[in-house]
Amino acid sequence: MACYIALVEESDPEAVSLWFPDLPGCISGGDDVDEALENAPEALAFYAQELIADGRQLPPPRTLDELKADPEFADDLRNHTAVMIEWPARTDADE
Image (cartoon, rainbow, N blue to C red; front, top):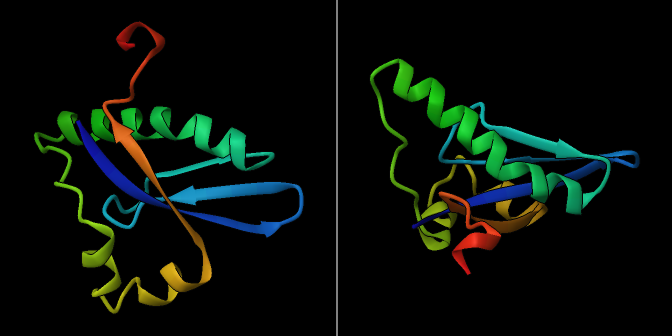
């Protein structure tokens, strides 16, 4: 099971967005952080489906340290909350 780092942005008081530095264009959202996190596995599933339809695979996830070392994301990691999202997502049946 892979774990992708996602960044949580709470810039709007009525909405929260979550995006994946390793997966350009893959975003999740919700009315609050819990809802954005709950929706994240579905966003990953749709993203993976699109890549597979194009004959590609999800790129391997980078570690938090690897992302911190990437100047493209260093400021984002300092300014937003980072969370890990498991892929494929675990379900209640997995426990």
